[in-house]
Image (cartoon, rainbow, N blue to C red):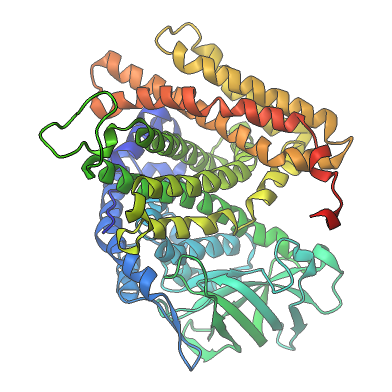
Length: 596
């Protein structure tokens, strides 16, 4: 049976020592979140993940969700009770607005907790995760009447939320949407059409599900300029807040899919369902992007979380499994064989996973703290800088974290050998569950195109220039620190490669757009390597400071070796990415379609 331990101490070290948690104390939400409160929240949240959610992961995967003959959907055994406990514990509304029943704590705390819940049970964690995203979109774009009707119970998790974008003929290209909205005399709209791949589209966890639906008002312009956003509840809500009649929408079927079986991925049918406009007509994508961008960050966390739980189980197995003898002589002569942790190639796989996990967790928290800063900093320039950082890094962490997270689950499965292929050990579930994160909320190829085509040139390159400045500034500020030098030099090299790649794109992307498309995925991964290397440099500096103060320990000291491993074994991949980028599009585009 798989196991999981929430990495609370590592999260706290990053907050206190790497990111100087006190520097955020001027933000309003942090007034109620001193570090002792943060520690208490993460500790209790970690226990909930370990003790309540993780034991349901394997069984939930085996049982899956069921659509009954009356159209209702039932989640796996134990999910409903666990969800009630999650809501009762206030976990859904941790960072929710206090005026709607949330606790009003900083956003980063919700992100940190989500790593634990996703690692313990990704399928379960998607229900409250999607609800938080839908709540955020309504907070920004809905009018006061819609907010008053839906947000109090969505914020606390008593009701859940979804987003309905994809249609059978329409995925990434939302301009092809056919779902239509017809005006009703009472100011509402009648929504008709079909949506597919709708996560948490129906279930038995909550009394109501609030769907955010993209549709085209009759007579609206073609393409993305004619798309509007609507809120359509599963059950209509009376003026006094009580539940009324069922809406004319429902789950037509549950998708049979590779993983996340405990989450109901539904085909949703809308048959004149009542919906209300959110935001302005024909500007639905603007409103939905609040949820989509939040969801992309949430999916990035899924990549880290699955990689972490896979690592924990693979490392435990490697220390226990006896096979063969060490190449340099028996390490456990009293036993029939040595544990496989002695073999260099097993260590290679484990260290590749762990050196990613710890740097990715740091990068994830940096982005999450930036969200708090962008929302609440009293300094206009700081808000702008944080917002730029989030926009630039969102496609990077979504694409890189989920690509690498899946690859790491496969590596962890390899460590287990034949047992990794057997369901009862849980590793093959991690592989299956992790795979979807590379696809949904914008396939990773789209993330790479977004980075190269939109984020780099945005505002005259302001965000990428600032990122280069932050990394270069750190390197320059610490260049006289001899102890830190071995951790900085490889990052400086990788940064130079990223700068070369950026210049190549500027010179060749406009000349031939296929050059930009051909380079995009390699550029995204090169960017990811530099960002992760930057995190390792900052982590190394924090550990060295602890050592100098005499407050380090074995767990912290080991991070220096992880940083060295990452710099020696992972960062050099940047050179290969740069070479591929500079090769251009010719070899990709030369063959005719018929030749494939």
